[in-house]
Image 1 (tube, rainbow over the protein chains, first blue to last red):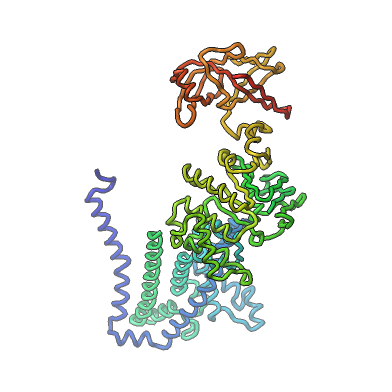
Image 2 (cartoon, helix red, strand yellow; image 1 turned 180 degrees about the vertical axis):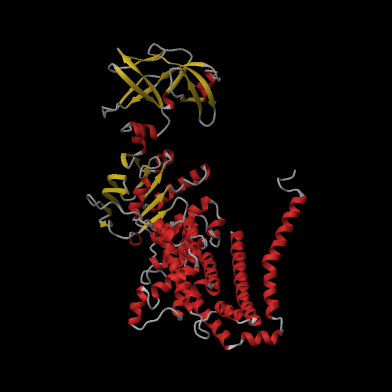
Length: 275
Length: 364
């Protein structure tokens, strides 16, 4: 007996097409990045990476990611908790609002923030009279990065928490546990893999975000240049090796993120199989 | 600890889940809340537990555990044990940690020492016969075992009252029977006050000291299983507690007629509906002076202590069910397609206008 679509010719064709497309569109560009970055030898690559401006861009990017993650984490958990454990008017609308950052183009998000918090903006002009500058400085970069990444954790948690229901938490409360104890000992262990997965996605996006950041950062070298912005500037300056060296760094971060994600999925699957 | 509910009602949005309810549960009693789904029994149980709050308007209700007014006491301070239908065990914790949970989250002042917790958990696990599975995770246990863990977990904190929400609903028939017996024994041994919810009348009648029958957010009757079965207060209770056969017809001069069937009854003229339990249907080869109720046997199931026989006739809207002793079954040489006559041993009626129940017995 042969299952439908299981003819050897069909199978070979499909596998071949999948492999070819993956190689052409995914693997080849990745190889090209590293090939270009090292095209004039390791020394030139290293000189480009250890350049002051590049180092500053790396530092700023990492700081922004490190600040974004905890904020998105708290926001995502709180939001998922609210949406899945309580019923209140407007719950559905809130669930839709979470997706706004996904639906809106990052450039538009950047422009909105500029409009609101820029020197001539609605809130920005008031802030300006108090000598607070958010746009074209690192707080602006942080704000738009949070905007762009805030749905990831909540999006991972909501379906899971909905499926798990609140019975275990109710059981904990009937046994006398307080709110924080219930969260720490019952809720958190149940959502930990989804939470880590959300953090990984948040991190990947926070590090790689270009559109929104490019609008609000102003790309001042050594000041408000994140790695993706820096990379673009180098490319515009016809410094191909420099640009690709930065690109290689970003690609490396992406690969590490993917490895972490695969590792998590593997662990989660193993735990499931163990049960 | 006794439980007293005064004027407890509940609305969800615009639907009334519970009409104002008053209920007294004595100390050490095992009470079953019985009703079809949507009758409000689980809501009532969750209100007793404090997982749901009763309506505050128009009049606030009151919940008392003994002399303690717990109406506004949070669940975690009510000292209840709650057993959930689908166990709700902490899936990432071992059986041991599940049972120990309630003890480990106690405030430092009241919390027993680690050694004491260990001793107490193992005593409970022994009681539910699961001490050999202490290190397993819940997913590695069968449904019946999980429910026993959940019961041990609820009892670990020595609750004032034990509340069980359809505790055996998700288990198969055999395990259910065992657990029921086991819970009954445990209850007699430890003598805690418990309330459980079920939609299974057999379970309610077998397990409870008293049964609270509910429908549409109302209490229909509260009685011991015997009284409930013998003298149901209304038609709903009668129909809910077992299989029922209906006989509808017109009474004229003491004879109820329905198609070509007739039965002598001591009732005034008018439309009537009589109800019979399956064991009140006696079958014979011949009609009698009082009754002429011809039926055809359509199905026979000789399983258990009695033979269940399905009967049809063109004067019947729905087929009847009769339970016949094996001896009678053999004597009548019953087979499918056979024509027989029904002689009611007894019938019941619940007239819509009168609240009084009429029953008439006949010598069989």
